[in-house]
Every structure is written in C-alpha cells, then in structure tokens.
Length: 282
Length: 282
Image 1: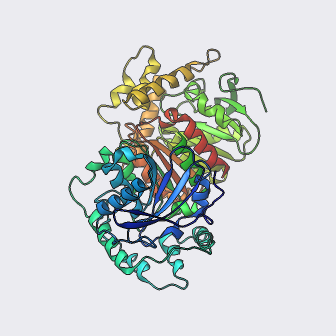
Image 2: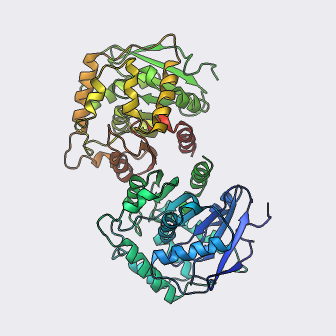
Image 3: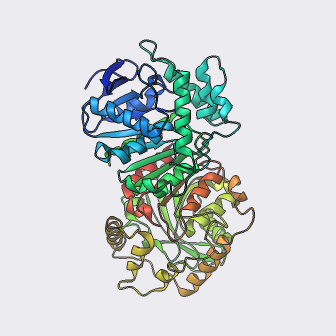
C-alpha cells in the first residue's frame, strides 16, 4: 500500500491519443481500481478527501481530469460521447483492464456512456447527483440556478455552498466543512477550468439532457451493478432523475439522503462511505 | 441481555383497554426499544428472524399482533387510525415511553399514523414497502395482484413468494430462504389471521389509500428521522409511493433495492440490517 493520500498524491500525467491527461492515483492496490469522473467546472481539487481517502483503504482511487479540464491538455468535447471516449483513452493508457466508475453530476453522464460503449471495462458504477439522457428538466438549468454558476464569489469556491448544499443550517455547515477539506491540499494544486471548456461542457450537458422519446432505452444495456445516490432536493439535476435511473437500470440501488441538494455525498460523507463500501464489496 | 432469540422468545400477553395483546420481546435492553408493526395477513410468525435477531443485538425488539390479529383478542379496526390507537395502547401498557417503529406495508401505515398522533412516543421510523395516505394506486390492489392474496397454496405460506419477491431466479431463491426462516420456530407459534380481521384490514387499507387532495400534508408533521425502504418493483404498494414518502417527509432517507418486490428487506437482508443499524445509530 502506498503511503500517499488524497492531499499528498502526486499530480501525474499520461499521454493518450494526443492528449496529456492529468490524474492522481493512490490507495491500496488490491481488487478493482476506482476511476472518478468529475462534475462541471470541477478539477482534481474538487474531489472530496473525506470520500476518496475512505474508499482508498480497500482499492486504488484514480482522480481524473478529462480532456481540456485543469492541467489536462486537449479540447473539451461538446458531447458526453466525446468525453466518454477521452475517459476511455485515459483508462486504456493507464493499462487498466477493468475499473469501478464513480461519476458525479456530468461525470455521471460520462460514466453511463462509458458503461454502454465499453461494457467490459466497467465492473460497477456509482452515480451521484446525475440523471439519464433526456431526463426531467435536464436540458437547461432552472432560472434561479443558472446564475449560481456564473457569479463571482470571494473566494470563488463559495459557489459550491448554494449549488451542492441545501439552505438549512445543518447542510450549509456541512458545506463549510467540505470547503475546508477541498482547500486542505496546499501544494501541487490543479488549475481552474477554462471558459472554453465550460462552454463545451455546457453544450455537452444540453445535448445529453434534451428530452427525446425512448431516451431511457440505453439504460437497459447497463447491466453492471449500480449505486445511485442523490439529495432530497437536487436543484441542478432534479432528484426525480435519480429515481428514473434506478427504475430503468436493470440492477441499480437508490439512496436518497434527507435535507440535501446536488452534493449529498459531501454532506452525508460517513454514511455515504459505508453504503458505497457495502455496495462495492457485495 | 436475555438469551432469548426470535425463535425462542416466549409469546407474551398484556391487557389494555379490554384487549389482550400478544407480543414477543427479546434482545439487548439498551437504548430505545423497537416495536414492529406487521403487514396485512401477517402474525408474530411472519417477522423475519434474520432481521429481528440482527437488530436485537443492540436494542430490544418487540414483535406485535394488533387487535384481532393472531392470538390478540379484540375486534380489528376498519381504519388505520383505529389500528394506531390499539398499537399505542399496547406500547403504553408495556410502559414504554419512547420507541422506534418498524412498519412494513400496512404496518407502515400504522407507524405513520402513530407518529402523527403520538409524536412524543416515537424516536425514529423505519417504513418498508409502504406508502402515504392517498398514494398512487393504493386504494385497491392491481387486478393481477389481488388474487394472490385469496388463493389456496400448499403449504399456504407459499403465497409470499409472488407477493414479496420478484419473478427472477435470484429473488425467488431468496424467497425460499425466507420461508425456511419463518418456518424455523416450531413451538409456541401464533395462529392464522381470521377472515373477519382480513376483511376489517382490507377496509382500513382502502380508506388509507383513497386518493384525496392534500392527502400528503400530514407527512410534514412527521419530523422524526425516517428510513424508507422498498424494492424496485413493489406490486402491492407501488414503489413510487416510497419516493413520495421520502420527498414529502421532512427528514427521510430512501433506499430502493434492485430486482425486488414488496419484501425487499427479506431479500437484501444483510445490507438492510447494516443500513438500518447505521440509520438507527446515527
């Protein structure tokens, strides 16, 4: 077992299909490694050490930046299909034959697409705060939510308090603890996601979310055991989409936490870690 | 700690308001005791020892027969409100000042009503395979489901295989293990629920399930932490009702298991026990 943790793991680079992908890898090298796929506007420093260090006790975890994100080079694709191809390139370049995928929000779209495109590569899926192709209210953000992503905050990471946490005192307090955790790594940090990548990923999210008849059909082809997790009132990807995922995936378990929003796993970190470990080990 | 288990606990009786209630009580007498409220057509022998013995390691569990059920005397009420009054009478007679309630199916209706009527009596709730007043498709059983309750089986407890478990081989196999578990107690068993009680409880379920505007309002008054659990396709109380409970209760967590039906906790017994223990201890 390496002695690296979330906050000390080196930022590493690997070349694949002309892109230099950025990742951090740590944990116990037994069993199936877990690849984490990040949310819109997030980079390597937006994964939560309270989750990754817990999961790393029984597996390797590999935090990733997709093409065009943070220190990864390349142009961010304007489709989830393109993002899934890039994620597969990175996994292949790392020589991994089978992985568990942990996709949060837009990372959850990529995880689903990757499970469809490369089923042999994926053992199990954890999908948090995400939804299916053409889910409910997924083609654009709600009018009162969209501005939360564009505003200037001081410091800027305060943006995650209204986006990931519910308005309650308990949830906001959990949010401030989350911010402390993602600020704790002081050296060798990743760089802010560029405006060009934000624009490309916005287009990818709109394309994925556009309602279309039969848009849930692909879910029947994801036979991997899947754990779907969300908060009771996700203002970014409506909570009902987590229910739709569970109802349409052949082998999915759903957990919805109380008094929570898009980042319920950052709020209910300890139960989340226990449930996720239980699911991964089953 | 008593040395009694699910299968060795004595069947006990206590008088309250003119009814002689029947119960079994065992487990570790620390913390808040848990009172279990049974499903339609079930008696003391229909609780699952794989669940009750696990929960009993860290609390007392009290299996109950409501009025008119099994060896309990009295007339079964034709309303859930009446059943909740009787359950409260039993809890009061036992001298318990606060309990956790575990309600399955119709027992879940009673648990909700009791939490509304006697909030000080209830610390936490576990609601399995159940739904809110006036939930979706709850006023009557589906046309293909109703006959499953009336048929003659040999032996009769085979009725629970299609009612509690999904048609898959894995779920039916879990069902046969469940039947072995509930048959394992050979002495001092309870008696079959009478036709009069079945008729009264049918009326109570219809009244509870009748759609009515604003019928979910009472859920806002159940502030106790609540764990809602169901299978992916509950043919008795549609799964969407578990989602409705979670979305309308102020402090509820939802767990939906894959490839499962009304009795998902009998199928995913070990994860259920871990999740329930995690929830109760939080």
